[in-house]
Length: 152
Image 1 (cartoon, rainbow, N blue to C red):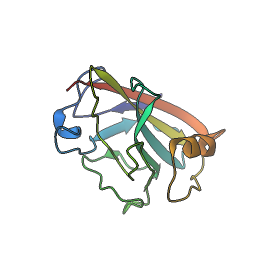
Image 2: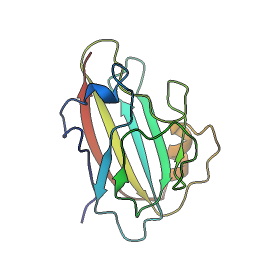
Image 3: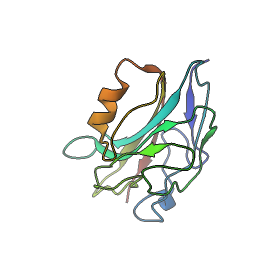
Image 4: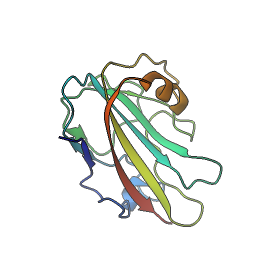
């Protein structure tokens, strides 16, 4: 079975509700997944805006998620270490945790990518996307993607 990433808040290609953006409560959206491969040690989730003017804008890094978790609830607190052992890195807003969509103009796409990994990641407290990509190298068992949109 191939991994699948979904959200009860929005469907593939559909708008992300305002409560999960800078125009609302700026909460992280709920995420559900299924089809996690055998031998998965941890999961990692990345959210980026590929339509940002300079480069992909990182909105969220959360990793070392236990593979037995069925997903993530809405509103994950902006803490580096969560109660289940998951860790959050630094987004391009310069903060730990989730930073919701806040496009300056036009409709942007927001790519949520889930990775199944064969080992926990050893990353420091100020982890950024380049750090995460290097650490995941050679350890990705499968991946899934969910893309939502937002326009102000």
